[in-house]
Length: 351
Image (cartoon, rainbow, N blue to C red; front, top):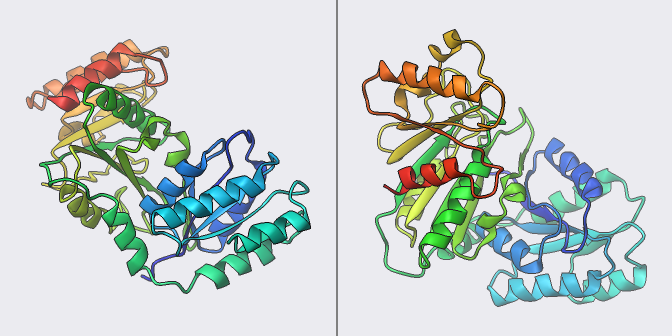
C-alpha cells in the first residue's frame, strides 16, 4: 500500500479553540490524508518537536490570536535549526491575518496563507499538490535520527490495550509523568495507534490529550492501522526495532480500542501486557469472552470512582484466578491527580 500523505495540524499558544482546524482535519481525512493533530495552545517548540518525530511533510497552523507573524517565523526558524526545513508550513486565521501580513509571512518561508471564505476543496488540493510528491526516506531518517543520542539500552516494552474510552491514553500519560519524575535521565518512547477510516485517511489525535508526553525526553510516533485488524499497524514491529536500538529505557505501545476477540501482541513483541477496561463491561458472562483476560499480565479497572467499580474488580479477580498465572488487578482513576491506583500501576510497570 502506498504511504499516505502525513501532515500535522495545531493551534498556537494563547489560542483557546479549535473549531476551524477540526473542520479542516475532517476534510483532509476524507481525502485520504493522515492528520496528526496536536491540539490547541501549543508552543512553536511543541509543534516542531512533534512534526519531526511524526515524520510529517507539512505543518498546518490555525492562528486567531494576533501573533501570527512572530509565531510562524519561530516555527520556521526551529525547523531550520533542527535541519528539518524540508517540512513545509501553511496556515490561516480567518480575518485575523491580513493580506499584507500574509505577504510578509510567505517572504519568511510560509508556503501559503489561506483566508476566510477559501473553499475546503482549494485548501485540500493545495496540500496534496504541494506536499504529496515528496520522498519519504528523508522524513523517516530525520525521525529515527532524533531517537539517537546515547548508547543503546535494553528498553522494556509495555503493551497497553483495551476497549475504546477506557482511558488508555490518559494512563500512559500519567505513567510517563511518574517515570520522568522518578528518573532524571529516563528516556521514554510511545507508539500510539488510531484507526484508519475505511478507504480514507486517519485522525491521529493522541498527542492532543497527552500533556506530559510533550517532554523533550519523550519520543512519540502515531500510527494508523490502514485497514489492518487487531489494533496495531503493519509498521509497529519496525518502529519497535528502531526504538529498541535507540536511547530509550521504556517503550509504551498503545493499541486502538479492541473488542472481545483481539490478542494484539504476538509472542515476543512486548515484555509486559496491560489490559485496560472500565467497570461497565456488562455482565459476569461477558468476562468469559474477553481473550485479553487470559493473556494480560496486568488488568486495570480504570474509572474506579464510578459505581460498580469495586464489584468489577472482584469479578475480574475471580475470572483471573482460574488462569493460575499470577495476574494482577489494579483499580485506577487516571484523571485524578496523584491517584494511588496509578502509583501502584507504575510500581508494577517498573518492576
